[in-house]
View 1 (cartoon, helix red, strand yellow):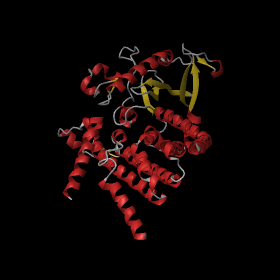
View 2: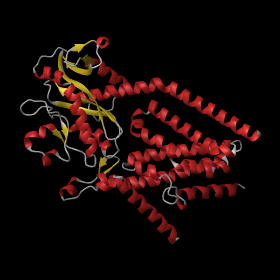
View 3: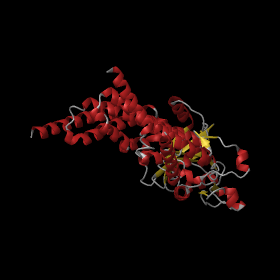
View 4: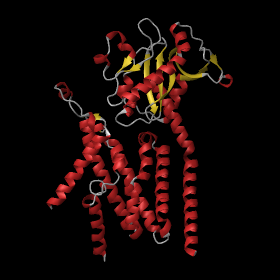
Length: 233
Length: 207
């Protein structure tokens, strides 16, 4: 009996000590971690816009300053009209705008797509013509490193710059990830709607293609406004 | 006595590094060895992280060894290891966010690594804190060395890179050289680890 008491006592004590340590670390570091995540998110928006270069390492303070100066976030309803954040409906969409000298240069659409193992989070920047992709970044995913995880690699993301989400006739077709190299596999008239795929990551590419199409479809009313040069943002 | 303890510690360390290396001799920690060896960088950081966790869990458990009730010792070991790993993860996310982003899944995997439990159970429960700490370091390094060896060949042959930098000249590719995609997949890792196990056994037998 005293042995059992000793075990219980030891277990209780251990649990209390471990919980205290973990709680202290978690609450004490939470503010810092959240700030890191926010800065990382802002950095990825800046990278998608091409305001900072991929390889560039910049401090948290610089990131926040660049973000404040260049980027503003807006909400639009499903028909593409701007709405105030506190009045937005459940189907409102977030959008990030990069303007220079009071003209909109490009806008960023948040990409939260299904991947093979979890959600892929990223940003897709589109030029102010509403059809050309300016850049793409991935800031969070659970794909296999070396295979699907290559979606965050520089060569894959660079792939997207200059591609179109519309076909030669100007109709929305989204952008898709090819199996293998676009130049080898695709007829030349639709090459601008495809990016090179990652070998060994066919499914990740398939899901990301589908996710992007779905998201870009929802954002199509805004893209149309940009294409018609009739933007009220 | 000084000599004896020195030779004992020396023996323990050399065994962990070579004669009974956790991966290539005891075939422990294979699961994480498959997962993190696609790239040299993740393998290296995983090796360092695991070394620190084994060393400190060994130290703490060795300090507590005379007080831990036998019947709940495994639970106590797991609790200590899990606490250490979560603490490490929290600190990484607060102070080295970029590295933690690349590693977060793997850091969590350390808890399930049988090397950590194995050393706590077989060594730290019956040895002094100093020796246990040294044993933890040695086992971590033994594990990390094999991990880096496997990752070196997988990254070099599988994607033509080392630490993310291309090392196979472009002219090779033009001459018809292809990266071996198989090595990036789990079967490639099994084959690679198998070759390391073979190599070690063959070398030990020769002696």
